[in-house]
Image (cartoon, rainbow, N blue to C red):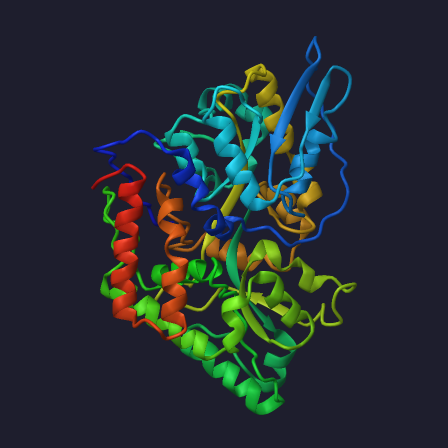
Length: 450
């Protein structure tokens, strides 16, 4: 199986790290890469079979709260607080986690020890030495941890510069979600291209009267950037020149990607630039929409009979490509846990807790809502949306974001430009030029040059 290899970076010139820029400015955009928020899970039933410390010890876990992350956090916060050990996991929203992580790990007085990581943040953490490489511990205890049950592709998503900096907990790819009952009644095939998807939307409107069958998360504060990553990858485009900190966002592929975003937006309700996944899911649950593309970790609410009368009406498939012959218009996101390098807690104990948080029991608790990184728990859960997501994961280009420490800064400046292209106030050509300029400026401001 061939996979897309993200470019490496060459920090030929570095300026003194400015923490407020590195992550603070990008906090809103980072929500694009957390694939599990919005799902539903059950309670905690995780055994914490570790050697307890001899003296009173407190460990603080930093993880944004969501039904997909909470089972893994609770595995240590609830399951391991006993005797001499206290594990705290204060409530944290997504943007708050990012800011707190930077402040804690870049200073001399750490507030957090075990850190939830994902997509755009862990390369920055790893590059600055804020989280530990885990290769030695994994070499010694890999069999004990059962890491052979974790897909190697997912392990790779938490590697940086050839080292493993995190252990995955759950993952998701963007998949195509549709009303299978409507498609069956109208004799519609699952679309394989964007043109077919838009045509199916028009047919559904004509035949059923549904006003806006197609609903995609195009929120101008961030989701539209994920949509851009989807279409750019499907068209064979790249974010950067291979091996260099040089953006390639003004290429013909990028212009075509912006054209695709604009035409897709015109096929939807013009309020789509205010939609994130929860709004889209509500439209699907209430029968206002019949098609979408969503991260797999967010769609379990569609299968919950307590939340929608249509719970048995949805189908899931590999997303369409932008054009015939392209790869699926998708995106891959992987979450996991890492150990803060500046923690004052014994590192062996920290690795024990990391093992519990990413272990099979925690994965089983989360499997009702999202796709655990451990294959056995994912298979046992028999999730209706998992086969489509796994087909994307095993495809030619699952389309994760490049693993670069300045990726968050590049992402932060994109959404306003993309929103202007989508709503027609900026042409695709001008938008591509603006994306390129914004990316160059972000990389330079973060202290990197080509």
